[in-house]
Each structure stands twice: as C-alpha cells, then as structure tokens.
Amino acid sequence: MFTASAIMNMKSHVFLIYPLLCFLFLSSFVYGQLDYKYYDTTCPNLTKIVRNGVWSAISNDTRMPASLLRLHFHDCFVNGCDGSILLDDTSTFTGEKNAFPNRNSARGYEVIDAIKANVEKACPSTVSCTDILTLAAREAIYLTRGPFWSVCLGRRDSLTASQSAANDQLPSPFEPLVNITAKFVSKGLDVKDVVVLSGAHTIGFAQCFMFKRRLFDFDGSGNPDPTLDLSLLGSLRSVCPNQSDSDSNLAPLDAVTINRFDNVYFKNLMNNSGLLESDQALMNDNTTAALVSNYSRNPSLFSKEFAASMVKLINIGVLTGQNGEIRKNCRVVN
Ligand code: HEM
Ligand SMILES: *[C@@H]1O[C@H](CO)[C@@H](O)[C@H](O)[C@H]1NC(C)=O
Ligand SMILES: *[C@@H]1O[C@H](CO)[C@@H](O)[C@H](O)[C@H]1NC(C)=O
Ligand SMILES: *[C@@H]1O[C@H](CO)[C@@H](O)[C@H](O)[C@H]1NC(C)=O
Ligand SMILES: *[C@@H]1O[C@H](CO)[C@@H](O)[C@H](O)[C@H]1NC(C)=O
Ligand SMILES: *[C@@H]1O[C@H](CO)[C@@H](O)[C@H](O)[C@H]1NC(C)=O
Ligand SMILES: *[C@@H]1O[C@H](CO)[C@@H](O)[C@H](O)[C@H]1NC(C)=O
Ligand SMILES: *[C@@H]1O[C@H](CO)[C@@H](O)[C@H](O)[C@H]1NC(C)=O
Image 1 (cartoon, helix red, strand yellow):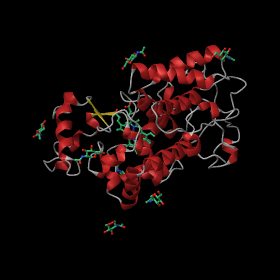
Image 2: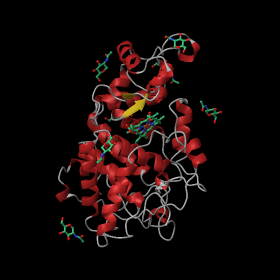
Image 3: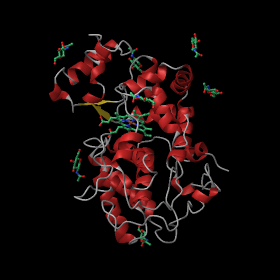
Image 4: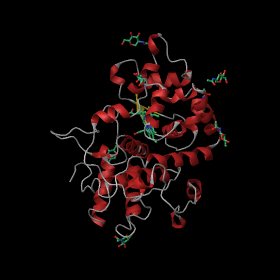
C-alpha cells in the first residue's frame, strides 16, 4: 500500500499510483462505495477541469487556496462532507452559510460554482458538488506546493443543511483547547488531528474581531495577552486599532510566510507568534506542545501527517449510494 507521503513525493501526476483501497477508518459499509476511479469512465477529465478552475481562481486571488481549504473543512465538520455548506438560504430554508462561523467569513463559493459549470458541460448530472469541493481543496494546496493527499470519490450532495449544527459544532477561536478537542473527537478525529490540521493556519487570513481582545484588554487585565510576541502585537495593533470599525480588517494567520504552505505556523507558536488564542493555546498543554515542537522542527513530518489527517477529515459522514443526490446547481437542491 502506498502511503500518503509516497504519493506526495511523486511530483508528477502522470506517474500517480493509487493506493489499493480507499481509506477505511469507520466501517467498510460507509465507504464501500467510494472509489479513486469513481468517475474514470463517466467523467475522465474531472481532475483536469477542477485543477484548471482552481488555477485560474488562484491567479486572480492568492488567498483562494486558504479559502477553499477552510470551506471544505467547514463542510466536512457539519453533518459530514456533503456539500451542505454550499446551499443558499431561501425564505423557507436556513442552512449553514449564515451560521456564525461562516457568515462574512467562508469564501470560495463562486469558484466552486464556476468549476461545477464546466464539469456540467463535460459530464452533466454526474459529479457531486461535494466531490468538486473535495478535489478543489486538494488541488489548491497541491498547486501551492503544499502536501498532496489522495481523494476517494463518490460522495453525494446533501438534501439539507443545519444552521444550528454549524453554530454548535464548528470550533471557535474563543473556546479552550479541551472544547475544540472534544469537537474533533466527536467527528472521529483526535488531538493529533487538532494539532496537525491547525497547521492549515500557515496560509490565509483572519478578521481583527477574531483575535482583537488579545491586543488591548485581555480578560479584563487592562493589558494585552502575555502570550503574544511584542513585535507581532505592535503590528497587529496597527492593523486592528482599538475601535469597532477595524473589526473586519485582515491579518495573516502566519505573518512570516503568508501564502506558503509550510511548517512556519508551528515555528511561530514556539515563539508566541500565533494569531488566534486557539492557535497559541496549543503551547499550553504538554501533549499538544510536544507535537507543535515536532512539526516546527520537521517539515516533512508535518506534510506527511497533515495529508494523513486530511484523509480522515474528507471522509467524515459522506453520503453514498442512494443517499443524497447529484446537485445540478451547488446552491440549491434539485
Ligand atoms: C482547530 C480549530 C480551528 C479554529 C478555532 C479555527 C478558526 C479560524 C478562524 C477564526 C479563522 C479566521 C476566519 C475569519 O476571520 O473570517 C480561520 C481561518 C482559516 N482556517 Fe481555521 N480554525 C480551526 C481549524 C482549521 C482547520 C482544521 C483547517 C483546515 C484543515 C482550517 C483552515 C483555515 C484556513 C485555511 C483559514 C484562512 C481562510 C481564508 O483566508 O479565507 N482551520 N480559522
Ligand atoms: C478531455 O479533454 C480533452 C482535451 O484536454 C478532450 O480532447 C477530450 O475530448 C475530453 N474528454 C472528454 C470525455 O470530455
Ligand atoms: C477576483 O478576485 C476578487 C477578490 O479578490 C473577486 O472579487 C473577483 O470576483 C474575482 N474575479 C474573478 C474573475 O474571479
Ligand atoms: C466548553 O465546554 C463546556 C462543556 O461542554 C461548556 O460548558 C463551556 O461553555 C464551553 N466553553 C466555551 C468557552 O465554549
Ligand atoms: C480601547 O478602547 C476602549 C473604549 O472603546 C478604552 O476603554 C480602552 O482604554 C482602549 N484601550 C487601549 C489600550 O487603547
Ligand atoms: C518567530 O519565528 C519566526 C520564524 O518562524 C521568526 O521570523 C520571527 O522573527 C520569530 N519571532 C521572534 C520574536 O523571535
Ligand atoms: C507538563 O510539563 C511540565 C514541564 O515540562 C511539567 O512540570 C508538568 O508536570 C507537565 N504536566 C503534565 C500534566 O504532565
Ligand atoms: C516526534 O516525531 C518523532 C518522529 O520524527 C516521533 O518518533 C515522536 O514520537 C514524535 N513526538 C511526538 C510527541 O509526537
């Protein structure tokens, strides 16, 4: 069986060799119908179409790999990887898009729409929006020279979505590590997945209101968060002045190598330069701090373990067989 790292190291897709089996970690019943070759006969150009769409989106917006990865994570975490996050609200339906963690925050919907339109032209009513999002996130990170993970295909699209589940189940940067870990455990992930997947914060941006309380009056102390590096504090205060009109200004999650998918996120945590409280909190627990230290010293260990944890994430709660549907338009059920 080829490992994720073996595949990752094969820099040419031409020689890509599939693992023998789709990753199974809950039960073969759930994943029995996912397959690396799921669309090989029905939509042979799928990966190419997705890659081209992601490539053109990135050439217009260098933040897009981060946004697609997060969109995929938020889809998978709430009722499984089922495209539920892509559904628009209507007068009679309230879904995940406007849940607190997603509203004015999750991005990339137009990119998925554009790719879906091209996929529909090539192979109508064949490929789910969920599989497109899953492939798009993988391609986005791979195209930015990040880790590569193999994607089993055959996920179907949900018929519904739940705003309250999204509010309750997505992690918040304001909650303690034990709470975040509990949310991951409830999805079949573990504390190591929390740490290594948090490494996704090596790219992308956060709005000031997500971390501003660290900058001025932390926990009513009248002082900034003592676990925030002073020079980073200075630059964050200039991006996020102490007034509410700075709430949606953006700061990079990894200020050192903003758009590069590397292990610098973990190096930053080692010197008090994590942006979110939930990032820096990984240093306050011996188990997670030991993992952070490992990943900060060993970039290839991080890549390999990130890819392995992504494979767990992308198979959470998938719909197969007769469940769900293949949406024609990712924003509405058929
Ligand atoms: C461990 C718990 C996590 C918390 C509390 C958390 C929280 C956040 C927050 C607050 C933001 C900024 C959103 C905004 O300001 O609009 C963010 C951005 C981001 N998150 Fe996380 N996150 C977590 C885990 C993850 C995971 C597991 C992934 C992916 C595997 C991920 C990928 C990202 C990316 C790539 C961005 C930047 C998005 C962009 O620039 O558009 N996060 N996260
Ligand atoms: C796949 O794309 C190639 C061009 O890249 C095209 O010649 C071929 O017809 C496409 N195949 C299908 C089944 O759409
Ligand atoms: C390019 O990116 C910007 C955001 O940075 C977005 O508003 C715009 O719609 C994008 N244009 C295209 C053609 O995708
Ligand atoms: C953390 O979880 C506990 C138990 O579920 C809950 O009572 C508490 O409100 C949570 N804390 C935060 C900040 O969400
Ligand atoms: C931030 O603003 C609040 C009022 O909006 C003020 O009470 C506080 O002193 C300010 N803190 C700093 C450090 O400027
Ligand atoms: C923290 O580490 C980064 C490299 O990962 C470095 O560029 C930065 O200067 C360090 N900050 C401090 C205060 O040492
Ligand atoms: C965590 O590590 C510190 C110092 O390395 C040690 O003093 C402490 O007992 C450890 N805590 C736990 C819960 O293992
Ligand atoms: C750190 O990585 C090494 C492999 O490079 C591994 O043997 C060790 O168990 C890891 N430590 C932790 C705390 O994960």
